[in-house]
Amino acid sequence: MRVLLIEDEPNITEALRFVLSRDGWLVDTHADGATALRAIADKAPQVIVLDVMLPNRSGFEILRDLRAQGSSVPVLMLTARGQQRDRDLAQAAGATAFMTKPFSNADIVAALRALRPSDAPRVSP
Amino acid sequence: MARSALTGTRIRERRLLAGIKQAALAQQVGISPAYLNLIEHNRRKIGGKLLVALARGLHVDVATLTEGAQTAVIDALREAGGAQARDIAGSAPELDRLEDFAGRFPGWADLIAAQRLRITALERNVAALTDRLAHDPYLSQALHEVLSMVTAVRATAGILANGGEIERDWQLRFHRNIYEDSQRLAQGAQALVSYLDSEGKEAVALSTPLDELEGWLAARDYHLAELEGADPAGAPLETVMAREDVRALGGAAQSLLRAVAAQYLSDAQAMPLAPLSAQIAAHLPRDGLDPAQICAAFGTSLAQGLRRLAAVPATDQGPLAQPLGFVSCDGSGTVLRRKGIEGFAPPRFGPTCPLWPLYGALQRPMQPLRQRVALAGQGERRFVAFAICAPQGVQGFNRATVWEAVMLLVPEDLLPADPAQPRRDEVLEVGTTCRLCPKADCAARREPSVISGPL
Image 1 (tube, rainbow over the protein chains, first blue to last red):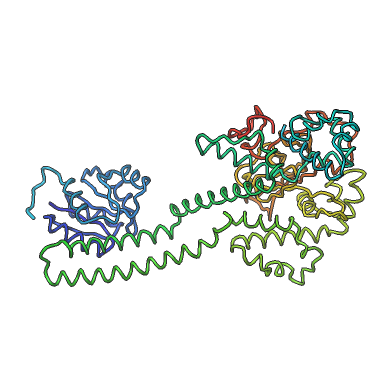
Image 2: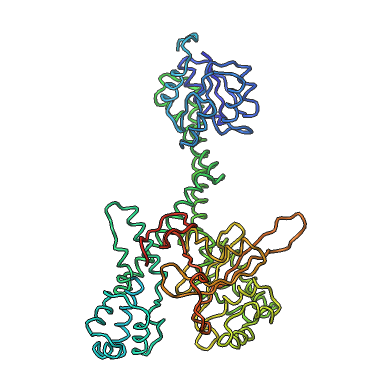
């Protein structure tokens, strides 16, 4: 099961890569908003973890374009704000789930397991 | 009823002050002592000939009995009462006995009015801070960074605490990450505290720089004595800006004050106080106050003249026994400057009455307006409003014109008595703000009034 983690904070990326790898995910990472769509096309993940505040392009814009391209890949959005307005924006952009920073490792693991497509091949942890 | 209520209290105070017995005064004006007693205790309405007779018997003007210095206090109390009834279920302040309360307990009334203003200012502060939290880009970015650091620390610490077997290299790497993130977190938090601390100083007692400026001007009765007759070469503006109470203002308020003071200096040079006072004194008792005539004498624009007249101080020795009111607004109708006077206290916060001649002038730029006005529910007191809307600054082709409307309010009792009583339709009944206006069936009403009937 392949997850693409689009997050610009390197230590968060490193910690999540470690945690998710231990949970059995194949983790790819990307840090730049402007080239995120190309990374998604290249890596073809089954699930995407997408930060809202990215350099050069916001997560909302990336997600809107992704959905406009017809992609239905599950997307978990990460943001530092938990306001209803951001949740509404994420939902309107086509997010599958929404998580507010700071979160626990257990929370994100559980959220990604819930988003895992049922027909995707399982990888043993 | 409310005006009568205060009037009754004042009649009693004046009678006691003059040492006149109730029975003697009653006999003099042709009523029974019992009826006078009811009037004095605000149990009976009073007006017309009887009021004039009582004033004569007490050797005071009618106005002394009918006008208090408490219009602003009464308005604030009414606002407080309305807010209380709205916000706190089951509370029912006696709004119909409000002036009676103010007359009997002026100290408490002042305190409640001041607290209401304070609450309003604090509510605005909270709204402004909430707005800033949501929209301040620096704050948003700083909070995002702090939360990102916290997320990194939490995720990494979670691995170390619960991760089971972790290779030595990974352990060292995560320890280093936590150390780096904690350093950045500390720096981010310090920067955030520093930012909020320095910004907070701007928002202490008053809500906006305009409020600060207005408070400063009101404390000086809108008259800047140090700029009267000042030599521009002597840098009088710097003298004002160097004052201790000016330096205590926020930076934005100081900038506003500098602009206001510069305009004041320009007005004072165009219309020096001594000849201006002489002009007013020469015409006021006989012909009344004609701003157009005065402006023509000094060769100034009407807008400048109205602004300047509002800055003439009211003194026993000067030409004006009472101060003149003033309000100005920009093209959007937003009030820029307000100088309240007895009987006409523009609201400090929130929208004003759209019926003011000020807004009439805004709709007809460069056309001077003269309009008799009366405040709805405030009895017989009338004002003459002079208003004009004029462009500000330098104009040019294909450039947006910036308009400003100004309105001067002259209490009608300052003017010579008009033998012909104005027809009812010649007097425009206006309010200060909808919430405090009892005018029924007003086409301009934008929100319900807290007053159910006449004041």
